Amino acid sequence: MRLIEVILDDESLNEAVKRVKSNKGVAGVDKMTVYEIDIYFQNNKERIKKEILEKKYRPQPGKRVYIPKSNGKKRLLV
Image (cartoon, rainbow, N blue to C red):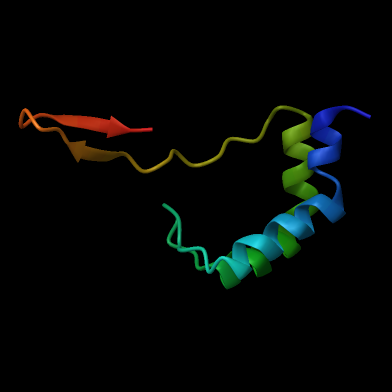
């Protein structure tokens, strides 16, 4: 079994969602709460998994955050 198949296994994905919820994760760039993501993912899981396996999934870009440096400039937090 390939690593991506292990990652996309229903048990692995359910555990990941469970851990995010238990950590009280905050909304991402899409502004969905953890509980909204849970419902969205349950409704769209198979489509998302298929797109990932077919290399067609395109996630939304991440939010850019800059942190100040001691010299007054800012550095992109990656």
